Length: 252
Image (tube, rainbow, N blue to C red; front, top):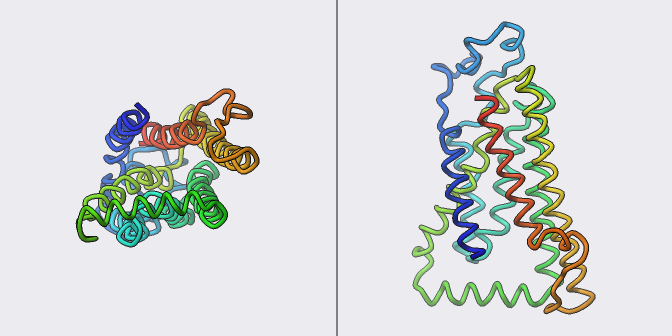
């Protein structure tokens, strides 16, 4: 059931945000503003960014693909370290344009940087200090090798890369489109939900790791944030990425 839920979430997320990643830029890559702003009042257009400063589709795709190539080395790395690195990298690339667009766009880009960096730091610490996860990593790798050569992992690697690309895609709009009025309030709410989700996921990871270190690997964690959420890390991610995708509907 958990895998079915994740698959449904992945499909929904991809459908929601893929269109924003392919949002066409202006006819020229000069210092023209994003075409979505052309019909907006001058007071809004004044804050728009040069299109050249916004990460292109190709740049975002490369940023998501390069770390995912780790999956050819260790399969598990394609959905762990690659995930964090892709999100942090995309957020960092969008940050300069977002900073010139406004504090909400900046906060959107920054949450990806913070989330990705935090996730990779947590995964590295866990791998270095918990033997059980190294054993699990090796079991996953052994199963992958039994299925054939490393090139057979290409659908998996490219699929993960495409998912990360879709998850980062909303940045191309929020970093280029100033908002005001009710749209600004709505975007502020979405950003708040993003940070709430990121914090919930981080707290869940930290609490679970600490509890299992103290009480054993087989201990069922039911206190702390787990008293209210059975899977706070997944719930936090659903909140983070759902709010990020919803931001597209506000600024587009």
